Length: 195
Image 1 (cartoon, rainbow, N blue to C red):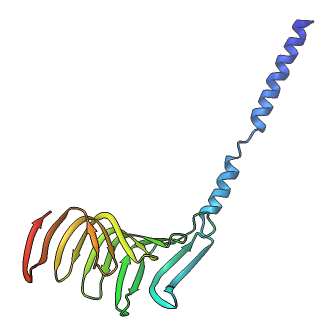
Image 2 (image 1 turned 45 degrees about the vertical axis):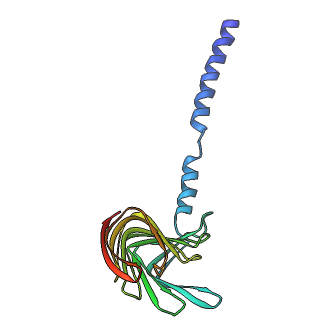
Image 3 (image 1 turned 135 degrees about the horizontal axis):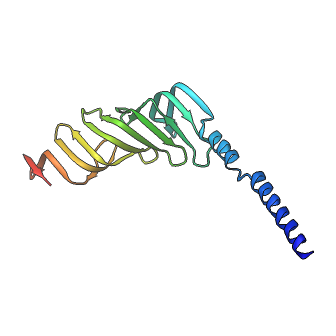
């Protein structure tokens, strides 16, 4: 009798195990569908123009052919997959123009990540080029860890890493190469140095 009950229990246990395995779903397909929904933008806008103001003064204007809105995610952001252009205005209302092939605006931090053929043209003729740059809209500050080139009346240089205000009147860099005009005791000289 014991042998017979043991055989029946083994058979039922095997059937129960098969049913349990077949009926169990880890829910990954449902979770993937939910995540896929969250990865889609909640809005797509074309030919946009965003104005950044501080105390009713226009500080910058951002334009782009396409804007993807991901503000429904916990870390909100807007994506500019077809590039963007930002015009900065200084206190004299002079324009500095920044263009890039791609960008992301992180809404909470007000930082724009610019990528691909990033070019900054200053009102004084200065030109900066790099592959990636960050713009902090709150502090009106630019920074990159990438290689960049910078040219103006006084400089023609290349370096890795840049931390600067939008007018280039205050900046720090890493290793420099190039030509720089140095003012020393009212005498000007051109220094061609590798630092």
